[in-house]
Image 1 (spheres, one colour):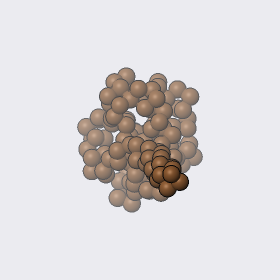
Image 2 (image 1 turned 180 degrees about the horizontal axis):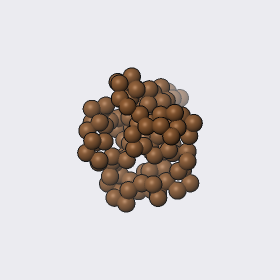
Image 3 (image 1 turned 45 degrees about the vertical axis):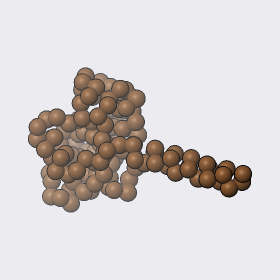
Image 4 (image 1 turned 90 degrees about the horizontal axis):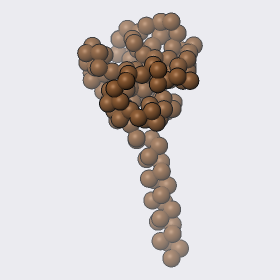
Length: 129
């Protein structure tokens, strides 16, 4: 019985960890560039206003500055592609914005895991301010 309980607890721990970390689809760099070019994505930068002002992916929304009324900054179409990003592959802060978008009813929420650092490393331009 003790071993069965241990297995159940271990399974619950793994499922809980996966729910927090793998909930949002990771969008590739090329797919993100294409969506930006097509105007079919809304980007949310979760790096904080100082970092946002120093450089963000063109067109991105500053999550910190818009958190109180993120609904007003997002498109009316709840099926629109929403992509949240933070600094790099080691950063999980994007989940805050992604969760808010899902809580607002958005059904197509993704994550750009390379973040602003990966965007810059790929030689892409950034907007400032």
